[in-house]
Amino acid sequence: MTTLVKDEKAKHDAMMEKINSGAKLESLEEITSEYRDLLLKLMIAQADSELAGAYGYVPWIEGAPTLAEKLAMANIVKDEIRHAKAMYELLERFPEVDIDKLIYEDNMKNRMQVFYEPIKTWTDLVMFNFLMDRAAGHQLRDAAESSWGPWSRTMVQIEKEEWMHVKHGETWVKRLSADPKTRPEVQRALDFWYPRVNKVFGKPGSESNKHFQQFRIKQRDNHDVRTVWYNEIKPLLESYGLTVGSIDQIEK
Image (tube, rainbow, N blue to C red):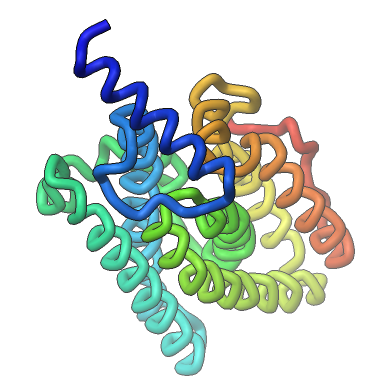
């Protein structure tokens, strides 16, 4: 066994001892290359999702139906951009990461398919808000409990703000569903967005997810997070008189 391999094994053992004790990892020097690669994969994806989410909401500052809603949308955009900025600042700690390239050149490589879908109407917007921001909130819970200390602490505040966005979508979906004239449009928006947002959780039981859990970068399997999300949205939507698909209905 070479000295390099021995050093990496010693680092892995020390790192795992700290992780299993419930302590946070704080420095690049104490993490292995495998941990580092997995962590970067998730953090880069989240950074882009925050930025893409902001871009999707920007047109609805102008398109919102009231002045109060224009302000609400402007505040959501501001929050998402600030979340993206916080994520890219965390990524700056990794010398191999080119932040400008991620933002301006390689962003499409890391973007989830759901962000390519057009948000055509206000009803579309609030349903996306209702489903996607809630999905993000549950995924951020895992990040807030991550073994990587800098990410964990940053996510605590971002998670709180994400749930404020969820409340905005929930208020509007409930309001529009209460009116028999607009409820069919809400149902159409739900039928469109539900399988697409359901897909963002990823495949259950994947090998990569097992590694994320081993290192406590993520705490739960993708399907466990999806199930918590589904068990929240289903009774809410049904109480509004809407019909949601099964948990297995995922956009191919």
